[in-house]
Image (tube, rainbow, N blue to C red):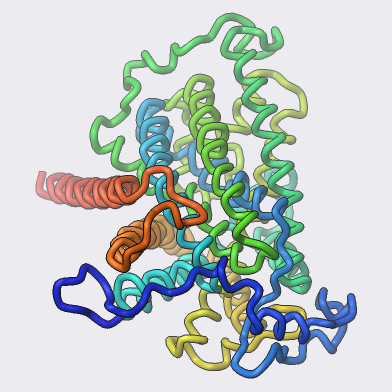
Length: 508
């Protein structure tokens, strides 16, 4: 937008919302070019790999997602390694109170972020939403940076998730090399992406239902265990309560440093929550489907993260030695460090640990597929605006951005670094980078929403004209920005403390 003296944002006329133009001639022209047979639409023949032609000047992805897909992506799409596995390391570093509070703080932040994103996505359901909103409402250079930041975030997450898939399988069989498992799941992700947007949507729908059911079962079983209703062969046959909160290390293990150390894990665990806004660009009717999907995020935060991790802190001690290696669990090869698996083992519930390990496997594989989806769609949007090579604008007849998908999938091969002696060091860095990259993405969404509201008001529009409004409004976005800044400050403080402590040890 061009600047105008005295105006908070651009002087150009506020863009006409997408919900007012859905019956335009362009939309009709697009539909006319989509009369493909079943095999071509679903990427099952050679014809599907040919470039799509939707009309002069029209470049679109396939709008094949249904409301049920968006709802499941919102409620369980990004639940993966950060929640099921990373929570173990967070518990050992910060204690049960830090684990619960940090995830709760991040939950408040992500709640406001997703509602702000929902308001923008309903108005402008375009491909690469996060990047385009930052470009339009903040600054093109900032949008360019955030677009590539998001691409790199998912390019990093994919090999991380593949490694966790391999580690999870080693819980059952340690005779096979980690590299064999990585190869198997990498091929599985390739197969899912052959089916394009519909393949991603159906995979997320099925895996989210499975994760949702498993988490509810875990919460109900944990509630019984805390009250002492477990088998006599386990440690929860008598009332257990909150005794781990009163251990010598305390509920806040390692004090302020421990509290700050959990934030990166929480950020990594919440990464991908924003994918529902990106998926809106490929839904049949985002104006109707997206608001309902956005409202599911509250239940995800409450049910999965807050209640689930509350029971983890009640049933697993922060001093449990089995959690020590979980700080490097992405390369340690020790699947036992997942607290969700340990609960079943400690309770004496036959087979429950294997079931939770299967849940972890499905969840992690699901995030790998999401990584390819999120990274490829953003890369295609960058290319369409001239901020990435033109090659990545290619979209085939089944709606797949093939070059973009191929690049992100190839990044998954970085998982084989785990086979090298320096693999653990590399993956510790990648984990930290992916968590911090998500913070910048969420901050940009909040700032873009604040700027959008300012432009909307400046051009004489009222909030009643918005088809979907963020619950917290501008104040919610400002709160999100504040919490993100707080997390970044906490991480800087923790790094300074660790550096000072290391220097002190060397000089003593």
